[in-house]
Image (cartoon, rainbow, N blue to C red; front, top):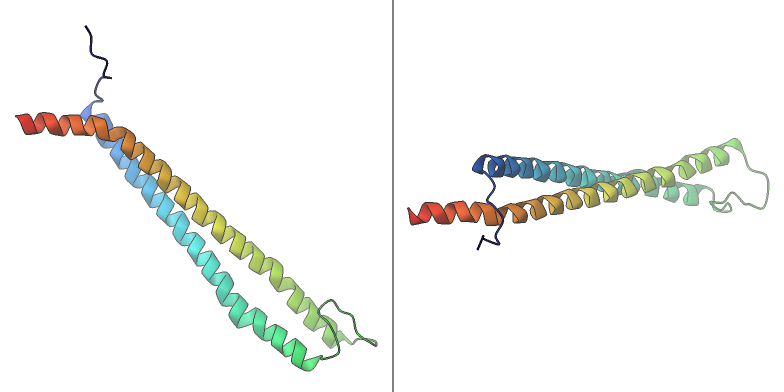
Length: 134
């Protein structure tokens, strides 16, 4: 009766698969690092640029809301301050969502590399067991 076990992969194929797994892990780590940098940049800009703009606006124009409503006519300075404030949320959102997306993609690539490594382990283990018996 023939063996029900699959044939072993050649050792060269196993070694090339392991090197491609290492490359996948490196790419996943790079994506995750870029993601963390984007999220960190978003937090940095939010704390150093956006919050001071809000504090300055609320201390200078106490009778005007961020939506632009006020009891009277507004000058160009108020409109300029509002325009400056309103451009930041979209930039911060882009940085945060881009960062989270990069982090998730890095995790996915790393998990795919782990699955590939687990699929190679029985073949590699058979070579190691054969070598240990010699």
